Structure formats: structure tokens, C-alpha cells
Amino acid sequence: MTGTVVDVRKDGSSIPIPEGTLLWAGTNSKTQELEKLTIGDQVQVKWLLAPTPFLLSSSRVPWNELTKIISGKEVLVKRGFVCVGPSSARHPRPAVGLNEEGTKLVIVVVDGRGDPSVGRPLPLLAGYLLHIRAYDALNLDGGVSSAIAANVHGTRCLLSIPSDSASSLMV
Image (cartoon, rainbow, N blue to C red):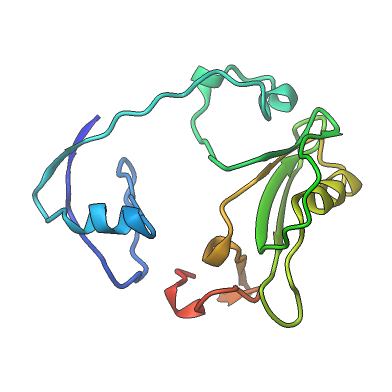
């Protein structure tokens, strides 16, 4: 896919994402690469989607027919079984899961690195997801990404306590 850079933001400010456009966001070393882009630059994006049974075991949709995809890190639960080994590392953790029928999505965010929560090891998060009936579940990226917000009666609300500066969140 080839495209043209139409905006560059370094302050993390919120922007609408029009239909048919892509948003690239980067942290750490990726931020440096993205900061080199300027408006009008031509960019080419290549990615590969490898067929995988994760979550598709519930939804039964062939991978090449998907229209929305979420990427993550560790598979926590697969077909009703915990898939992570022992670990005691406590971190803020967001995760998503589907029930066995593929009809209910669960979204979980564990706060961490401070009061009142110190995070959760992956095996405990996987166990909790099983407890709330996730048949397949995926750990997402942590840190400031470990936040959840909602529109409550027309007001955007942050429902968690992010581990990093809330000022960098787009709510």
C-alpha cells in the first residue's frame, strides 16, 4: 500500500481518523523513525497476515476475510486453556477475549506500577479471563496503553488509572 503523509503530530493530541486512512503511532525508537516524516512524504506500507487459529477458533471466519484486526503480544488463553508459562512479573496489562461462541467480547485493563494496583502477572490475568468465560484471549501492549475510557452519558471518562502520564492519552 502506498500513501501520502497528511499530518504529523508530536504532542499526542487527539485527531479524527477519516474512513480509508491509516494512523501510525510510535513509541521509543519508533517515534524517532516517524518524526522523520513530513507532510507530503510518500510512504509505502507492507505487512503480512499469517493465517492463525487464534480467535478464529471462536468466530470461524477465514483470516483473509477479516475486516478489523487487533494485534497483541502473548496469547493468554486458547480454546479454553491457559497458554502462558509461570511468571511473577507484575505490570499494567490490557487484554481482550472472546467467549466460546464468539458472541461476547471482554475487555480487561489491570492498572499497575502504583497505588492502588501493582499490576498482574500474565498467568493470573489468564486465569481471570478464564473465570469470566473467555475461551480465547490476547494480552495487548502495556504501559500507557493500559487504560480504558468510555463515553458515559455524553462525557468521555477515563475509567482506569494509567501507569504513565494521563496527559499523553487520547480520550
